[in-house]
Length: 390
Image (cartoon, helix red, strand yellow):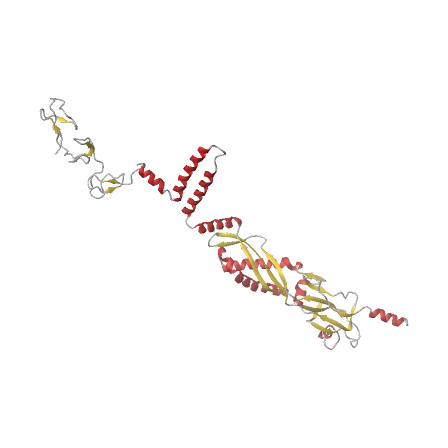
């Protein structure tokens, strides 16, 4: 073998014959095929798999994009060759070009969330601070724009390299959408899907400049501060209880039952029984709304009367009334004793309500002196007093 043949073989080893990329990662968006110091051979094979796109860049300019399929690099079926002008020698010389593989599949389960609370005006809570988080899916819709605007000359580009920028855009659009929709905080959970669809449309307007597209957008949770959550829990508990008074009575009965079961650290059987009986009475009063205590008070005569009968017409009146509301009779009437039995009667009564005796002043038949009720002999003349009962 002559020296020219050896040089020719060495030169041929620098030619690339197969261009392909097998993606073993889950988050790589762009991969630059290693062609440094090498040239693409005329007749080389380009293999582009599903969910991939191959972009040829010549002298810093994206010349053409190849979708899924197998291509032979020659002047017949690759328009890129004529654009690059690399075949000035009858398609026999190799060309120098950069090849970028772009992953066009959907990148799923990408997380987003608000790093700081969102201040919004709410009809129920006034000014409220909301936090939200969720997930989204995106893909490269325009490989050339993505390389030009985002990836640049990077040899490797994955989702983490653009994740922060995408999150900022999402949070901005999310805040703007909530402000425009004016949905009350308590009703947000019923609108997650609608909110997600609206935000996805807004985000795609921004992502279009990056050559990206959001295919799915999910709102997983929108939460209020802990203090508001506790207030909502109490409000929900009150609604679940229904009648608050009955619940309070039930709680009091439970507390008193526990107290009855506790004998005070061995204070004695008698004390325990006494406490149990007292607690039992309290439980009855608590469960009956205090009716037993009221009946006991009425039976013992304790407590102020609710009404007072009029001395003239016997109609009920308020305890502090000075005149009857029906007949106008004065409620405060002087009391005098019965002339026979001494029972207390109102002044001016004609008959005793106890013994029925006619109420006339007693006078001594001997000296005409007025005598007290029940007197049997006149204190002045000693005359025996006759009974005035009729």
